[in-house]
Amino acid sequence: YRDNAGAFNYWVNGNFSIIKNKVITLGMGNVEQDNGMIGNGSTLFIGYPMQVFYGYKTDGVFLSDEEVSEWYDQSSIVPKSKAGDIRYVDLDGDNKVTTKDRTYLGSSIPKYTFGLSFGGEYKGFDFNVLLQGVAGVKGRLSNWAGLAFFQEGNIQKWQMEECWNNNPTSRYPGYPRLEIMSNAGSNNTIISDYWILDASFVKVRNIQFGYKLPKSLTSMIGASSVRAYISMDNPFTFKGYRKGWDPENTNNDGSYYPVMSSYTFGLTLVF
View 1 (cartoon, rainbow, N blue to C red):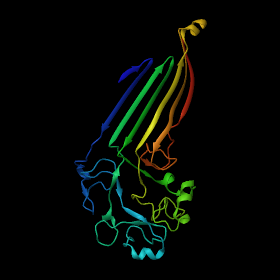
View 2: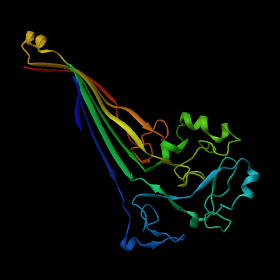
View 3: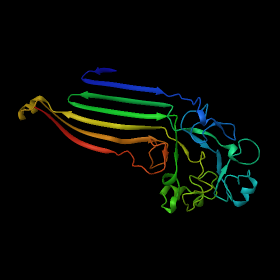
View 4: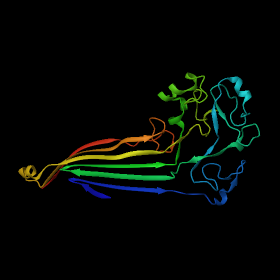
């Protein structure tokens, strides 16, 4: 769409798409799981979208060791639970938590993708903005990105501040009990909705501001056009994802470089 309001010329472009996908068959991967779902037991199941997260529903953490015995028996999937550990939910109603209680937790493929670009020009000044985003998508923090002391490594600030150890009366802390772990993980690291996050986002991909000098000035240096500008790439991201991590990487183990933000000043001369 293009129009003007007096000397101000402006334009707007937009796009929106809906992605619907469903696994129909997997050939030799059509294996019935112990909960009745049919698929490869990992990311593909018949009747569901591709690239799913498959794991357990949760209900906060245990506030005391005594609560463990009062909860569903979850020893078959996580032995020796204690205060601060995640409580997994019994979905099939047999009063214990087993692999039968795993379920669909969302997909890493966005259901909605969209973009918007707009700009304007007024008496030599101009601007352009490009936005892009997705919605209806889940992401997972794992390994170095999500787990404190993973492979006996470091801890992030949010893990220290939000862990159950610092909030022992909180049923739903931002992080469960702190523990040093190896590659094998722990009671709290199996795939569950505790670690599955809304990965929807809107990113400002580019903002550019410019000014074109009037011809009365450019002619003095023998140029037909002179434009100065500042351009910003990836300056802002609006999200509900964990602070410090990029929701664009939906299976985030921390072993990647984030999208860089850059700022450019320039001068365009045309003779």
